[in-house]
Image (cartoon, rainbow, N blue to C red; front, top):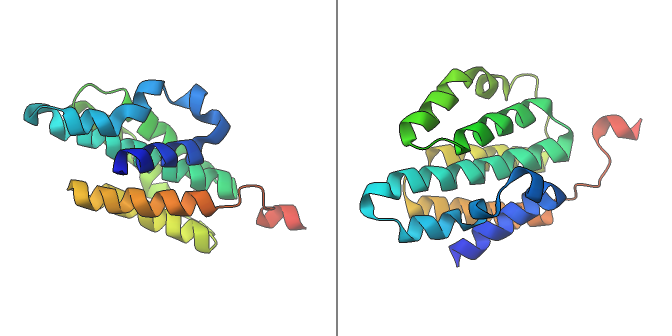
Length: 156
């Protein structure tokens, strides 16, 4: 069930951008984790975490036209191309400034706050049950978001 929710989250967050940003193999990351031998599970878990985090940043960026979340999403996307946990960590460490700026001068509505909270929980998740809970909540939230609603500056 979580593999299906994972794919639903990716489709809901990336919508029409999915083919350009995510290879079809990324949609199978959860199943790859489930089938991975023990020595690969850590790396496969990190790929799932990156994709969930990217989904949340994509939703936040689209919801509020937020450049900092787009920059974080790009860092996560670069990390997704890594071949090891160490390479993922190197990419994230190199561009840590984007994560630090994510919360600077950020105005978000209730949905944006929920997305940021789930993003934090994604980064903190260290077990499959914890990640499954984030995927469940994120899938439900992203499905309910109205990306076509006018932004704050659009209403003037």
